[in-house]
Amino acid sequence: MPKKTISRRDFLKTSGIFLGSAALIGSGLLIPEMNKPENILPKFEFGEKNMENRILVTYASQAGATAGVAEAIGKSLSASGAQVDVLPMKDVSDLSPYSSVVAGSAIHGQKWLPEAMGFLRENRSELSHKPFASFMVCITLSMANANQYREGLKDWMIPVRKIVHPVSEGYFAGALDFSRLPFSINVLAMRLVVFFII
Image (cartoon, rainbow, N blue to C red; front, side, top):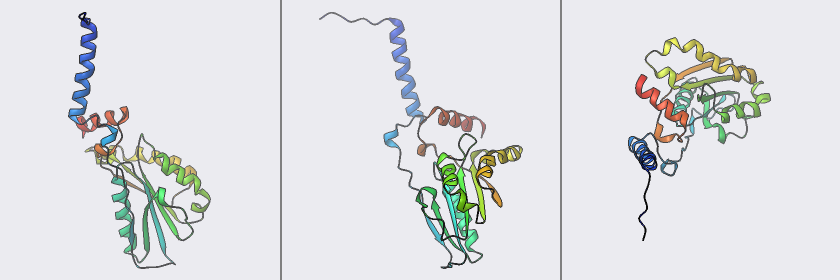
């Protein structure tokens, strides 16, 4: 059988790809999609049954941190005697039982998640006739120098205000669990920023 040779260039290229992939997987920067846990978003109910004062807190989350903020908002609102349902936006089908709505989203690329913007567009008419508040959860507010960014973050809510103008807005620090995010160049870049800056 004839001996197969490989050029030095092809050897280095193949070795580089192999070693680079092994380094990314070994460092956790690249986690194959098949090993990703399914992102199951929780639902909560707080307060006594109160049909007069029933509030919906709904959220869109990519990795789950926004669910924790929504839960805290729900608990706080129920302390005033309201019945509060905390639901992922994908599970909300009817706003009519609610006297008011609080909607929030994780921030990705300086924007609300597409699912959250879709929810606002689909429910624009009904949301504009009820007290409506909004919130965002952003990793930028977790950084040591977050105060210098706070005013600029308010601009990220402009698209929300154009659809439904909230009576109140909340800005909360987020957390990143990279193991729950799908791999992309943006996630890799964010991971490097977090590693070197935060």
